Image (cartoon, rainbow, N blue to C red):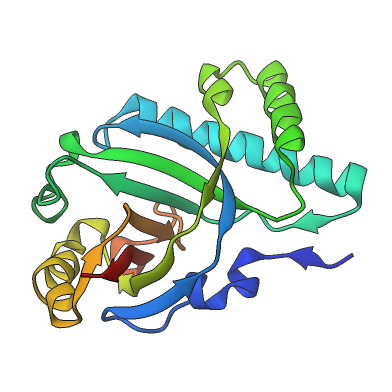
Length: 205
């Protein structure tokens, strides 16, 4: 049995080499998702959302392998981030951040299977946030993207270049939420070696 791995199948989206902004065409994808707001470093809601996502993601993985004979590698944690004031991402005013945390799902995973696995996970683990896990489809299309290496709080200069230089120089405007893909585990990786894909859907201005 071959295992589907989104990082291998969509290398242009999950394994970029460029450390400055460049355009990429992102295909439509489905995810499981949970929404929230606040500082991800201190918000209990954020921690519960991530735990709920992984709980459901692994339930889906094992159910797919058992009932469909189709296995996959659970994808990395991803997040959409937005605010009424975009500058808060440069200033790192995290209390004003809205977030939607995501884990990619293979195409063969249906809404019914997600619902079934959410209920099974909720029955096994008394974590109320599991009930908030839902299917989400993203169609980002043309996006500016780079690989950021280093602490999350050092993303500010790259985002400033995007907002104040790259978009205007290429006659582009933002067309969706800021998207991050976390390729490393912050609990086990020193901050200087963290690898994060930064992505911004765009369109012609």
